[in-house]
Image (tube, rainbow, N blue to C red; front, side, top):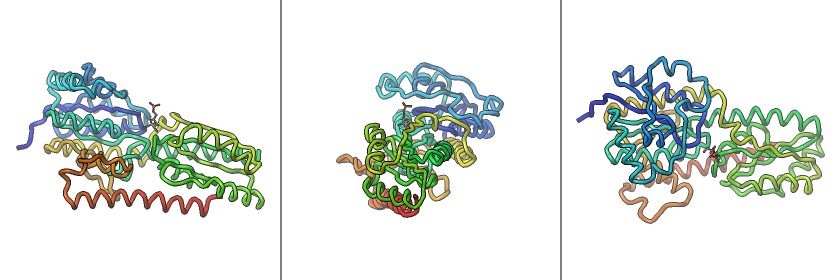
Length: 355
Ligand code: F6P
């Protein structure tokens, strides 16, 4: 039988991402529209533990869609990983009659949502991370804006490189994932893109740089994913100079690309995800994350999403696949293969057309 929802909570957790506010807005307005009250939980799971709750009206969220960051604040909360912390969070839900939660964030956030769901507080996850590192979804809220921010910075660097006949190495965020790096690398016409997912052939890049320079090219951009480490990205500057003779500078935009006005793509994906999350939660669905698959907004069981991530990273534990059908395992393998093919294809194009 469907549970009758009186009130739902919404929170943002983990690293913030542009577009999180658009999810909050969609969740708040959709729930109120469907006859359910909404409260904001301030500061992620730690706000749930420490009873930092505020009611949300449509008016409260009316003008937040163009704002970066998260107006509910965010946190990475270790206490929530303990049973004691979890019980405090559940007590807060009981105190405020919170019947369900929509948790916006990345994989850590979804793990928390599962822990709450299995203890009787239904939760649905919505992606909010610039890294796009959730294998079950094609895109995450915040990814598009972050890429466009890198693009704007890279275009400026190109201008000054062109004037001074230089190369610029840009190290971009993404944690261990190279999505931001490979996409912006292609868009910026980067002569080299170094990511964790694919072996980086420095010698081939130096060769391409020298050939382009000989043909008259004055400016070069190299994009490096932060997952390769500071030693790698900073060290590359000197190596490029030594191997090509091209004067090279280094930029690490870091958190700059995590802030800023969300793009249309992020806003609308956020709105569609938030709406779907409310719809499903009120229908009695829980313990799922809202994903985008080939343009469609679909729920995916959180356990499935976390395991397919581990499969993709080659980090499956012994009993991880227990309980999944052969069909589901085949689907997971296909998803991982799709991701690998994406990187292989992108790398081939970058190395072929960027100069
Ligand atoms: O997950 C988002 C992210 O910005 C990563 O790209 C980056 O590695 C990490 O968070 C930085 O974390 P913090 O904000 O704690 O420095």
